[in-house]
Amino acid sequence: MGQTIWAWHGDEGDVGMAWDWVQLTCGVVAMADPMAVVTNLRLVGEEGSVLTAYESARHFNAIVHGLPWQQAVEQALGGPGQPVAMAA
Image (cartoon, rainbow, N blue to C red):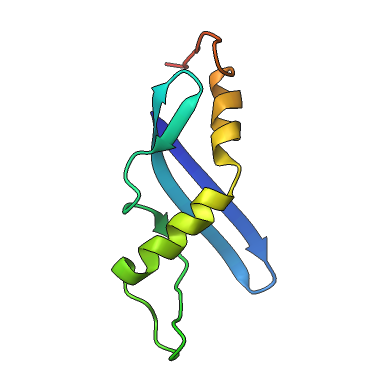
């Protein structure tokens, strides 16, 4: 298990998202808790008001789903079928 952090630096400021993940089996990693994405993003609805954390959760999950984080985690773990070496 571990944590992935995604960050972006733009002209209007820095954006970050983080989530915990677990390895279900060799070659398969998943978000540990899809409702626990930590971010400094604030989403605004069609009416112009800031969405609540609950309302934002599905959008954050869609963002995470679209990022290639699982491949990056597998590479960091040594790839499917390879022994995993963890630093103490």
